[in-house]
Image (cartoon, rainbow, N blue to C red; front, side, top):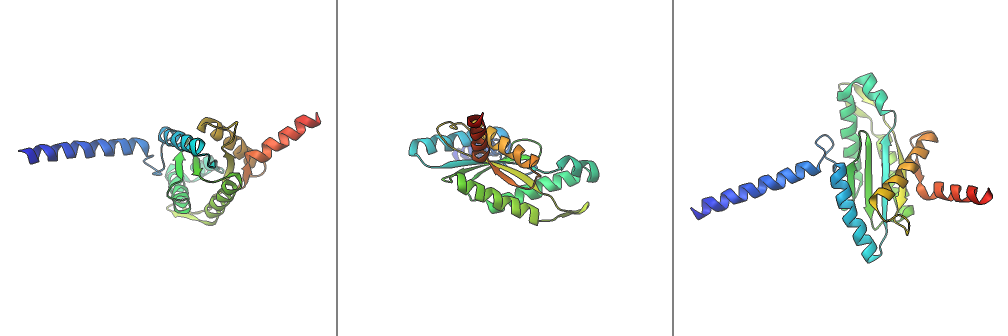
Length: 198
């Protein structure tokens, strides 16, 4: 009887763990959901601040994604999202956080990685995505993505700030022609110089 009770409790505990995991994972891409990503990122930022180690953030967006959906259909769009997520997970380290934070928008948190390191990782991801044709019922599609990076600093101590900075850099990459990486520090430096000139 005790064994039956223990097995029932174990089953209930496993169901609860699976439920929590499914709530934290995007069903299509198997990346973290926006909420789970931000919660985990907050913990990593707290650790980085406490132990005074580097931490960086990457935001990226698949270029012309709406065109893929409009031209080839939503099944092709889903295949692109899955393939891009798979490429990223294969490229990133086990300790890196990877989340889907919007429709075709993803984010990465890199513990123990500084500003220059984050730019190098973004460039590696960009090249990997651009090099991998995505095959399916829609034929073979080549997609690219635009990346923005930011790093933990005196000013940027929250995930919202890091994401906003990386996002601003990503939009700069899109305006500069897409399929490229831009660092928040380079935009920030340009603005600061411009403000001083004025």
